[in-house]
Image (tube, rainbow, N blue to C red; front, side, top):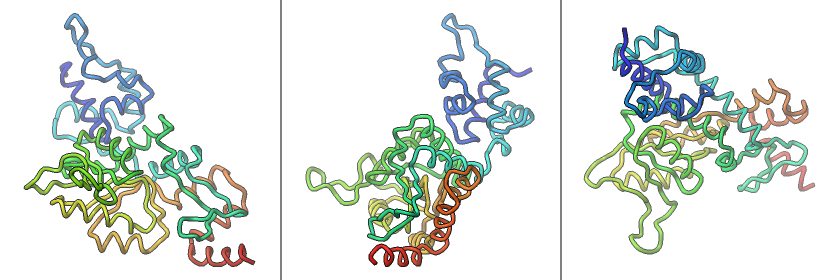
Length: 310
């Protein structure tokens, strides 16, 4: 017979193995986010409150964990539930769907977007929009925490750093879910006061393992400013996380390798294209043009730049 304490510990471990807080797991299961709060595990008169069989059934269903997984988590504090972790592909496709439905990614082959570089593109991404969509944002951040926990391991992260400016809110969301200290890094030192480039506390005389968080990555070149600043301050930084990675530029892989960084991303343009095709979000002509761009972005942009200028 398991005790009240053991049952709740099992729920906490299931949440942690999936990369969630207890409230995050409850939310994913469609329960009140406060259902598993520690303050609710004991009634006002001091009597133990037990989780319902329905709530346990829902958290097993949403994580894909088996009852055997759950029992092992209850019995062994060092146990993990491998089947509780969603596949990376599942998270990528769900993340892509969210990006499309919140119009954080857009397709327009007939009237291409003009990128910061001045080149035309049939696709555009704006992850900054996502901070305004509460449920979708929570799902993406829960997925991010799960991916980070699986691929890096919480024990290998001491501090989460957000990159100015788009990475700051996502750094905060991830730090909260991982229960880690947070800092943020400016693109350049501010010109007054302490002249700080890093805001928050990065302990002197130590070499904390820092995870850099940003909203997206194209070729990765902009990450160098943040990475150099963190390393100059004494941090060890080997990993970066983004919601969206273009996934179409060789320079991205080259830059990450040269900087000694492993990039972890929830989704890419290829996942977005797959989801768009599967769900009929755009017409065939648009999808064909987008696929041509993703396979040869530089050539596509050159051809359409000439066409536009003609």
